[in-house]
Length: 347
Image (cartoon, rainbow, N blue to C red; front, side, top):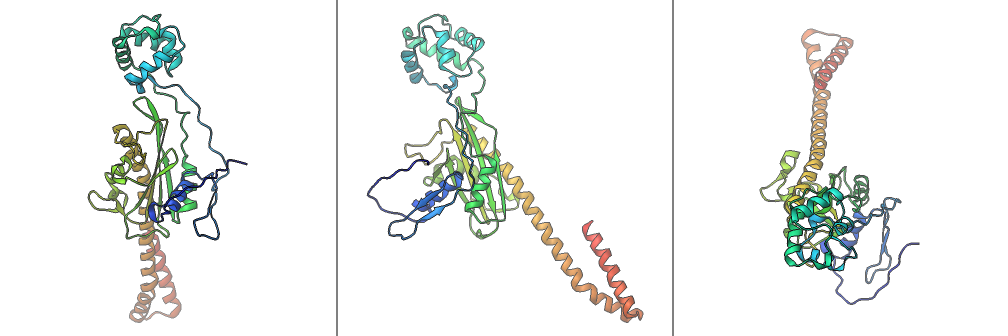
């Protein structure tokens, strides 16, 4: 079952952090329901990326464009191609979140008659209609057109591909930029086999597709760099990634991801998108900070406990010698001192 694709192409097989294998590995992380088999050129056995979950993602629902995301040229083309016979039906049928009341407000602000034929609008009429849309308060578009990975599946993907001690994920509520709905997700993996003396690794995804190139031009990288990771217990130099055993996964799901170029390797710096990136990173960072603080408290507690176990017997010997205690009295003193110090340590 499923889809099988076979093709032949000429090219240079590249390895490393931006090679084919890394691309497939990150694809498996962002699509934990997928199982991939990859046989490298010259290889004898294929590498299999085992699926982490069996549930298939819910299929997104198709929606009409939102009025806020329409520009002048697109609006003119829609007016020319529509089958609607008047402006009122055009607005209600060709756009989402436009009901009778909203339609009336748009046409009143644009000073256009509801029964005018859309195909007969001239350039000035189209511009007035666009101004009327901008001047009208319209509800945000629905979000069931998106396909986010989900908090549980983000963690499942990280656990299947990254060896760590701590995992957490955050899925932000859907937001809107220029009328286009989008949703941001962040996953963190910390500790374990990850190198503790290197910069954190950032994995960027757009609609489940890995973005391997143009790191510095991406809004994801900017959001990670400008977040204060020191407040979550990590080391960070000014303007740099945090240092520590950390992997940061950032995913944006949108009906139209604003890339910086045709190569589609970096997300554009929209203020609304950067805000959501930073809020998701901060929420995940707080969870990580609590984990790091708890680990430090546990380490301090073990250290104090080791001091008690190491020095209390020597104190017992000294008291026995000073006070002339019997061996059984010495043992009672050691038990009493240990119990007292343990209770005060827990308090």
